[in-house]
Length: 185
Length: 311
Image 1 (tube, chains in turn orange, blue):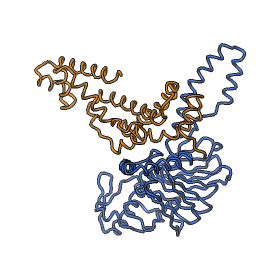
Image 2 (spheres, rainbow over the protein chains, first blue to last red; image 1 turned 180 degrees about the horizontal axis):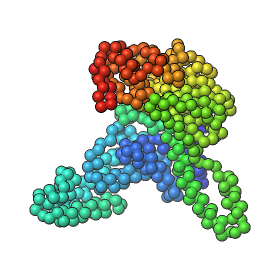
Image 3 (cartoon, one colour; image 1 turned 45 degrees about the vertical axis):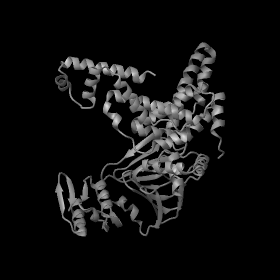
């Protein structure tokens, strides 16, 4: 079978909207992109995240006139995973501690142009840490008691000498701020 | 087979294991010559068609999503031109190629044996705890997926080869009789050929089997080994017999569990790995078989909570 280079296929894709070029690039990179996604969002969500990444590239193909297909699809998938993890982190703060197995660097070294691109989990942790650090002090205190120490609202109320209602307010405030800061970029 | 090349191929096909990722990454970081090697292997993988079990279904789904958007546009456009509308819609339905093949699923429970005749005349007999997926029509290709054990008598059709897929193992035949044991929870897949010729593909390896030969695909080290199958024991299960020569006790326990639906295990790891030969042809009950197994291993069976433990 004749092997056409990524560049030729990508040009056919951006200039002629060529579906067969898209199919060929999909076959070439979907398995690895899917495997990358599994490491971070798990098997259940990986197929959707990986496929949505290719779909989103197809839908906005005209914005990508130059650049290599490989690093483009990787960046899209990387950001999609990061976004999903941020959603999950807001709901279940503990999940950020689940370290994926394997070697993320392998994908960065073979996909990204800039091998200094940061590791996904590090990026996520940094983002989340930054947002938490900037929460108002009492709100931050209540939030950490809830998500890190896993205290229930009455326990937190006792610790902070406030009412349970006040604890509820702090927690929802924290979630609103986190949602705003983490997801709107 | 070059171990690093095999790992590279499983990287490209999306089936690489976490510890292998680490190995491959070190290989890459060692020298730029290694990076060139990886590019060469990638070209080879692309030239054989980018084989991967994850792609085809995903590609159909994505194409369906893209086409949905296109179809809506056609629809709105044709509404504007009344007379042309009918022709355009008729044309697009006529030329529209189905993007997804529908599969029919057959399953068996513990101790169940099921005979199925497929649309093309192929006979399949499923052993216990097995699932077989068959496409609704075989004209577009005779490709089935198997998780479990089955006996196949494939109707000959040289134009349309018959493929049995179990994970990364693909068995391709044009017309033959063979037995496949490919339970997803097992560490070894065993294919035994009775008649004709069979080609077995696993990632970049392939083997052609001759009659009375048997191939064992070891999933733990991705090794393929061929031996001759002396007796026709591989399909003895079809008659309800349990005949195995020189198998580990733990494997026999797994076979009994699938047949009787009762969890059986051996307390000692060393005994679990000992090999035994058994031949049960008279419809023996689980109690009778357990007592024979107990004698063979010099252990005592303990029945509790619906499970059997030999200790």
